[in-house]
Image (cartoon, rainbow, N blue to C red; front, side, top):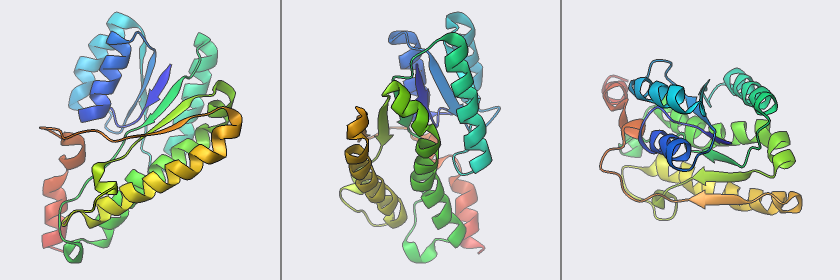
Length: 206
């Protein structure tokens, strides 16, 4: 089985479909929005395959993370499954020069892209050690080469890269691999930009 965050749309949605339909894996799909547009189609896949399980998850909230981990842990035991991987995919990007970003928009990116990944991984650590799960952190080329208008996003991904490198060394003794996955460009990235109108309003009227 594999646990994937940020499956409401975009990369996470595609990964959930691929792992379930093409790879034959059982997928625990973390969803932020209980009625996201992706859910209708994913429900069909879940009913047909029996291998797709939805997990309500807001990586910025500790209680949500704890509940998600408890749910996944219970399902693994119930279905006698091996957790082969955790894909930390949830992310948010805000375009705008740093001076114009509100504290809320800065904190949101830090909390989702960096703290959220750390928060979930820490709570999953007993399962990760037990199953020797592969931890896959979705980073970005922005963490390797900074771009104007994306200063905070770049900073979160650069920090995620460094954290992943250190975590890899820490978990090596348990036989756990930590991987940084840098995806290419997307024609559509709704999970990153889905709230751009709301974000723009908060900048303009702060």
